[in-house]
Length: 334
Image 1 (cartoon, rainbow, N blue to C red):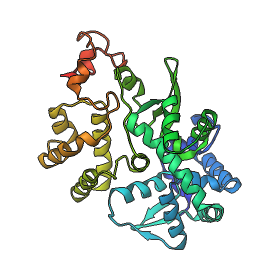
Image 2 (cartoon, rainbow, N blue to C red; image 1 turned 180 degrees about the vertical axis):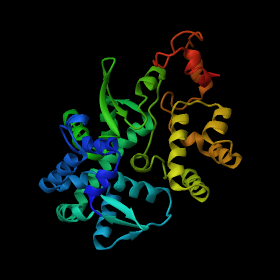
Image 3 (tube, one colour; image 1 turned 90 degrees about the horizontal axis):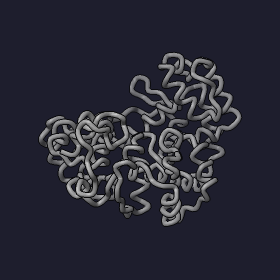
């Protein structure tokens, strides 16, 4: 199968989103066709095959190396394999056909060229840097650039601000995960996956920096979970027994949001996050304290409420949404 055939059958919004990720100055949506995007992709890979590497984690590069030798049968190997193969598919490098993964025919030579240029030791270091940056915004959602620089130095990762900004702007696998924004005269690194930084910063009245090891931050960046915590690893094993990997990913997104805003409401957790499944709720209750809190780390919602003045029900919501408090965040504080 050829990439061109897939692009022509795929929703244009999805194709255009990928085009924006790899093209520094993309044309307007209406001014470019899927055929144009295909030609641009091939032109980019021909000129700079290392761009393929910048789309991939080290684990995904190893998958591509294996696929250059032979197709790989799809197996239900769990959540982590699902993330890796799904990312390669979303980056239009591989496809699934008759239960086997393969590299697109018209990309094979460019992937080979990329692998010939790969300095595995150097790229492994680059992959750590990228994973930590993604991990930071998954843990904090929004974090001032000054704090970012200090945390990176504590992990022996050294950037000046200008080089960090360039990396985030140009590194393809970061483009849909993190961004640098200016908000109320402060510069922040923010999440593009959970794009609630204004709400987080509005609710964050007091904040203690969490203490995560480099390995834990990398794990958050790669898998959304701190797999260096034994109870989290056991929790993932439980999920893999009872849910398919795609459902695990969706469930974790809901749980990360719930914990991030420190909602702390058993009814919402049971009904909205766990879909009323008692066994799932019990497992979540055992690990929920291990998930990062974006707004007030180290304190429960009761203590958080003691530090803020809630608006009246008909007043604008404190999250900055523009809605009335009763129609927005009121249920979080009940």
